[in-house]
Length: 68
Image 1: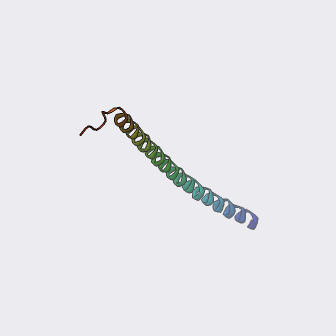
Image 2: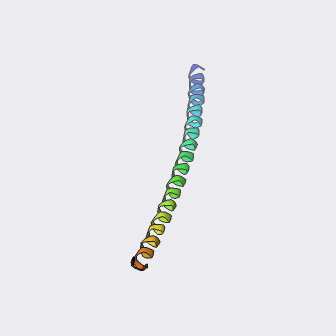
Image 3: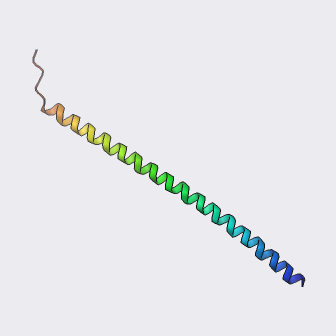
Protein backbone atom coordinates (compact mmCIF):
# COMPACT_ATOMS: atom_id res chain seq x y z
CA UNK A 1 0.00 0.00 0.00
CA UNK A 2 2.81 2.42 0.88
CA UNK A 3 4.45 1.70 -2.47
CA UNK A 4 1.19 2.62 -4.25
CA UNK A 5 0.87 5.89 -2.32
CA UNK A 6 4.47 6.77 -3.10
CA UNK A 7 4.01 6.03 -6.78
CA UNK A 8 0.78 8.08 -6.88
CA UNK A 9 2.59 10.99 -5.22
CA UNK A 10 5.45 10.63 -7.68
CA UNK A 11 3.01 10.59 -10.62
CA UNK A 12 1.26 13.71 -9.25
CA UNK A 13 4.63 15.44 -8.79
CA UNK A 14 5.70 14.55 -12.31
CA UNK A 15 2.38 15.76 -13.76
CA UNK A 16 2.86 19.10 -12.00
CA UNK A 17 6.40 19.31 -13.36
CA UNK A 18 5.19 18.55 -16.89
CA UNK A 19 2.53 21.27 -16.59
CA UNK A 20 5.18 23.71 -15.33
CA UNK A 21 7.49 22.87 -18.23
CA UNK A 22 4.65 23.24 -20.74
CA UNK A 23 3.89 26.72 -19.37
CA UNK A 24 7.57 27.65 -19.61
CA UNK A 25 7.73 26.32 -23.17
CA UNK A 26 4.68 28.40 -24.14
CA UNK A 27 6.30 31.50 -22.60
CA UNK A 28 9.57 30.89 -24.45
CA UNK A 29 7.77 30.35 -27.75
CA UNK A 30 5.92 33.64 -27.27
CA UNK A 31 9.21 35.41 -26.50
CA UNK A 32 10.81 33.88 -29.57
CA UNK A 33 7.89 35.00 -31.72
CA UNK A 34 8.18 38.57 -30.40
CA UNK A 35 11.93 38.60 -31.05
CA UNK A 36 11.48 37.28 -34.59
CA UNK A 37 8.86 39.96 -35.28
CA UNK A 38 11.24 42.62 -33.94
CA UNK A 39 14.09 41.35 -36.13
CA UNK A 40 11.79 41.34 -39.18
CA UNK A 41 10.65 44.89 -38.39
CA UNK A 42 14.23 46.11 -38.02
CA UNK A 43 15.15 44.39 -41.29
CA UNK A 44 12.32 46.22 -43.08
CA UNK A 45 13.47 49.53 -41.57
CA UNK A 46 17.05 48.94 -42.70
CA UNK A 47 15.97 47.97 -46.21
CA UNK A 48 13.82 51.10 -46.43
CA UNK A 49 16.72 53.26 -45.22
CA UNK A 50 19.14 51.64 -47.69
CA UNK A 51 16.66 52.22 -50.51
CA UNK A 52 16.26 55.87 -49.51
CA UNK A 53 20.03 56.34 -49.40
CA UNK A 54 20.45 54.68 -52.81
CA UNK A 55 17.78 56.95 -54.30
CA UNK A 56 19.44 60.00 -52.76
CA UNK A 57 22.81 58.87 -54.11
CA UNK A 58 21.40 58.47 -57.65
CA UNK A 59 19.70 61.85 -57.42
CA UNK A 60 22.91 63.56 -56.34
CA UNK A 61 24.97 61.89 -59.06
CA UNK A 62 22.56 62.96 -61.80
CA UNK A 63 21.87 66.53 -60.76
CA UNK A 64 23.39 69.46 -62.57
CA UNK A 65 26.71 70.77 -61.28
CA UNK A 66 26.55 73.93 -59.22
CA UNK A 67 26.97 77.05 -61.39
CA UNK A 68 27.40 80.39 -59.60
